[in-house]
Amino acid sequence: MTAAISVRGIEKSFADLTVLRGVDFDVAPGSIFALLGSNGAGKTTLVRILSTLLKADAGSATVAGADVASQANAVREAISLTGQFAAVDEILTGRENLILIAQLRHLKNPGAIADDLLARFSLTDAGGRRAGTYSGGMRRRLDIAMSLIGEPSIIFLDEPTTGLDPQARIEVWQTVKQLAEGGTTVLLTTQYLDEAEQLADRIAILHQGRIIQNGTLAELKALLPSGGEPILVPKEPSLEDVFLALVGDPTPTEATSGKAES
Image: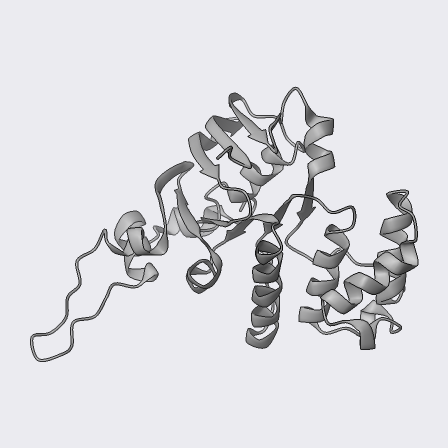
């Protein structure tokens, strides 16, 4: 099966700061692929390269079969990008936000498109309200709905639940699962271990600019033996156990380096 996203040897530096050091992975069509890493690991930089917003220093990548460097327009036609913070117009209603994007994409029947997406994301009752009155989870769902206008085959979600409360996070998780069930390929970046564990078909751990492990949740858990106290029921390792065993406890430098780049 041809990969929806294929990355080979991607490198990127900013002045004397090396962010990506030869990244390789493939994403299967219709799957959820989680890029898991701490702040400063290079996740956002990689997403910006794959979405043609930034040029790599070395390596190559294809998205929907198009080269991100030489076929940027074809890549942009196939993808949608949702950043770390919801990009909705809070003065407009939810429905008006969707209609605006449909009009900007020169699509027919923008009202019908808006109504369909409101229903799909359980926002019909709130469609006539200003987006500024929405909860964090509702704004995020509206943001993702806006990203789907034009039916992109691939969507990039850069830390989609940053700053959301637990209930809103669950709402977004349900939305992401529905996208994949509908055939959309999802690449999401996250620093939340439970998010990757709940959502991803495959998880790649990005650490200090490199993919240090890539596999299913079961494959990653198999890296650590089950264990426990002799008198207790043996405990299967969690994704958190695997992550900390691979990357170690963050040093003060690592813990602070992500303020400018995630």
